[in-house]
Image (cartoon, rainbow over the protein chains, first blue to last red):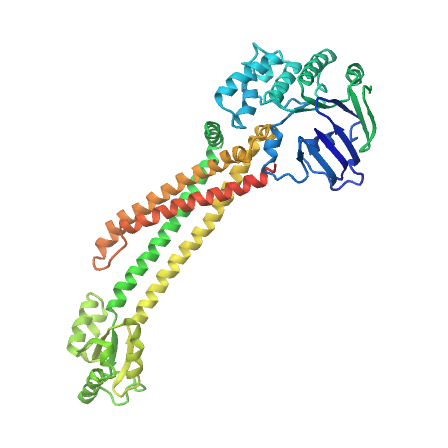
Length: 225
Length: 302
């Protein structure tokens, strides 16, 4: 599903590489935590998986695509098979909950009929039925992250990339969001989640990949922080 | 597709002032382009008309001609006969359509007509005006044949091809139309820059949407098309206005005014104007598509 081999990433103007000879394989249905201090390379790794960036050396294969050589006109179609959520939710403030989710389907050319069916379904799945017409500013942080999750999974992606999705949330809300992400994982979606949240990692007992200074120092199934 | 048009309308309403400035700049620059091309057409028409009428004048010596050209003074009857014979000779005849002789009296009459009301008409005397052989050639380009045959012949003061006067006028008109094209070129450049700035501004104000569109995998078509169309819509309005202005210039200024004042000159008409309009609109659309396409491509890397 995701195969990263001997990847190094050197950003221009910095001496130390952001990633140094990293190799990792993630299978279908896996749930992987990426942990490590800020600047350890978690975000760089996620950017490579999303083809926001290309490695300086090594190869990245995701969903059968070689992301180093992929022609740029195929990148959008590759990204449609991935869902992404971030710490800062990235919702459109002037669109309602339903419009935010629908927007991501409109821009990939889905029919109105499909959108009208899929949006209420996914809002029910994330527990936001009845709030479809609210604006993001009228929602709590946890609810906003649910909207972001709804948007990420409405197109039934094979992989969900989550970059510190609970970073802005209190512990109780974080637990709700993690329960939701676990459910998404149980439905067959591969989840890769970067986090600093020790309690979440310890409680879920999933595979943990720890990065330090751009290198993988631990890759442990059923691990803790 | 509905989404794209919604985005275009939103973009335009968000940047009304910039869109208006695009419209105005394309309007004015394309009006210059249109006017310059009409001027070129006009020059072409006038060349056809006037070159057809241009003659070569063989001016004969008078009493007051400078000694350097006319040491013998007034041209004698023999000189005139010799010239007439030469014009009728086998060498020159094939090139000549017709020629006629203008004596002092006729020259005086013509002069009085041409300079009616001018002070010079009072002072000039008949014998100051040259007697002239007017030669009309079959091909106006071959004036040199006559000039070379008669320059320096005894009794001939000067041989002048009227085309040399026309060429001066046309080179002035040509320079004017080139200047118009130059101004138009500069304004088109500024129009292109303005379009690309506007599009970039528009993209910046929608950067959140664009970021999300890229993340969820919207194709380049969906991301870029609204911006390109935004520029194209504005430029199209501008070029349609320019087309209207060009037609109005032809109808009201050229046909309505110039053609009345100068009835013996043929001017460009609405048919010529209608030929220019689609070119202007096409140029406007192409310019906007290129400018906005390039700028959005540079701004939005996948």
